[in-house]
Image (cartoon, rainbow over all chains, first blue to last red; front, side, top):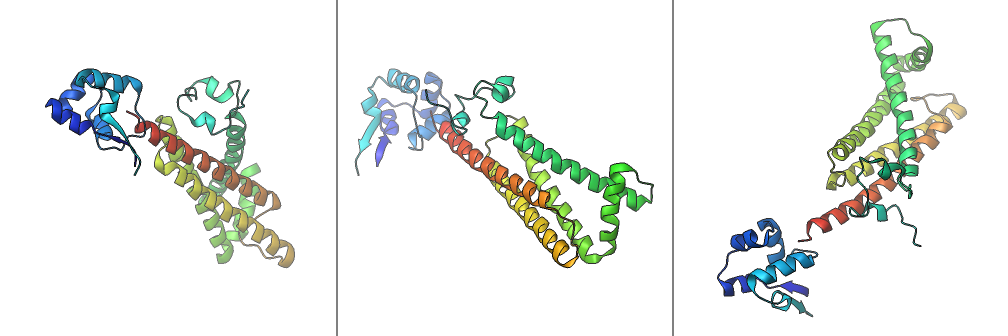
Length: 68
Length: 191
């Protein structure tokens, strides 16, 4: 319910590991893990921008609004 | 213009560093009044605790006592002779120590720049409970002393008010620290 994160799916499509993404965007693995597991309460635009840039995707590819 | 509340100031980004004078004496000054109230009340309790401990040590060592220590010794000596009163004194001392221990632990966390640890709100609540028990003990003593001439551990009307004030201050701080903890946790989960 609410906003869900599909980071793992995008990572799988790009064949990239969380560690590699962490090194590229400069966000700790712990924080990326919080994001990936849907525990994050908020995401900074700067983080989203860096992730989208590295994964070559749109914010909508990572974040989904789930009404159920 | 919206006047910030005490809880608004707990927002980490809005609050200046606690080690700077701005935090304590800034134009908003919201920390100053509760800080001063808490500081004065707690200082009163610490001085009372120290005088009790000091007079107890003088009595045990058989030394001569003077001034404030003598008056504290006069307060303690008849009570230590009576097991019930001695029990009351020990219980009162234990409560003072319990409060002091909790507040000092919070002070240590604050000194380590981690004031909003999860356990600190609980510590304030526990200290508030102890202060409330102290207030009840003071009240009981006032009633026993004035009504029956019996003394348990010593107590006064001002003691009732001071302990109650301390309990209220602790509950307020506990609520503020709980909110601070919630904000900190939320901030920790911002990526």
